[in-house]
Length: 523
Image (cartoon, rainbow, N blue to C red; front, side, top):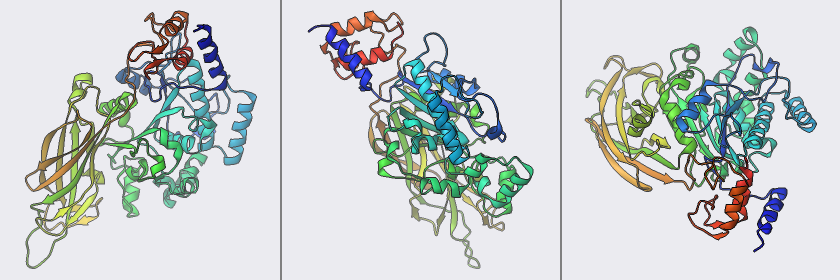
């Protein structure tokens, strides 16, 4: 075979936009961080869409073992971030880009549609500069609202072209914002704060108008994207909690965002990635503590680079002693039972020195739902999510603790039985070791002092490439992708399962591997 033919074919494929590079490859995927709300953000001046420095980026890069954006050449799987606030476009915007952004701003008044376009253009710029074939999106707080628009409304065609690999939301304003919707708070904000398009668009009505139902994930564009949610639940008894209690409308929250608006309650089949709903992890920290909460950061790292997902759920439970008095003069039933859970990952301690739970659902602050039980011996199906995420690399066992309490008096839960207890009665807890090495579904029993139950454990192995320290396309190992690597690929042309020249891992060295090398070109 003429060695020039494969090169000509590769060039032809590039000019037509065809590619067969493997998806969801952490070695070839850049990560874009999308920041949250600033009260003055909508009015800010300055350049948007440029690289920014953010402490969280360095933490993600260090724990995940992937590089920060920087150096020469720029690493393919760089971690990067920008701001969507500002009034001046960056140098890489064309006249057409500026015109399109101006049209979006005029149509919507700015806000989420404008910010999403800015993030999409920045993601394309990072991909062009690094040679990455896809991007991950890590969004925090209102940044999640921006990311939802970006994907669902296909800003700059990023989602429809399959260029988004994974999206992880951190305590995100996913489904609107309670405070932006509450009439009392919104009136106070308008009178004493800075009226903002951002706040207006976080109203539940606006969210419903854009998505049909704000709590439903319903778009085929999500079908190729691995989606995950981190939810924080410590309300810290701040202003948000006080207003909720005042208007008798309390919800679990982290002091800023309610837990209920931070995840999709319904996921349609077309939105599911490989038949599964998004991951969901709980941490009992407030809105601002999550950025410094090492288990939360570890879960970001594992989500961005992992291949194995574990879902653990308390599917059924039997209450032996519901801790309600047996009094002939007064029937105190039903008992109000709340299940609690925490998960320890031994590998998190080995890798990062983390001994705190990598998922933590407590009863405090209504972080876990309430269930009613009529009598001792009754069974129920709590469907309590214990853990659903990617464990740390190399993990074989998760230590799972499940407990329960009976609520006698708690203002947040709306239970008032002060004559029979001092607030909560403990039903005990049980800790078991759960093996997570084998894909599939298994069941394990828990046996606490006053209740028992069954855990459903599902281990899912995704067909993703694993993170390596190698430079994709660097066949000869000299740290760059250049002519010598192309020549090595051509020399190995044909069936070649497992060889280093088979860059995309399909068992053949062919034009697709040349494309992968050319996309990663640094030499």
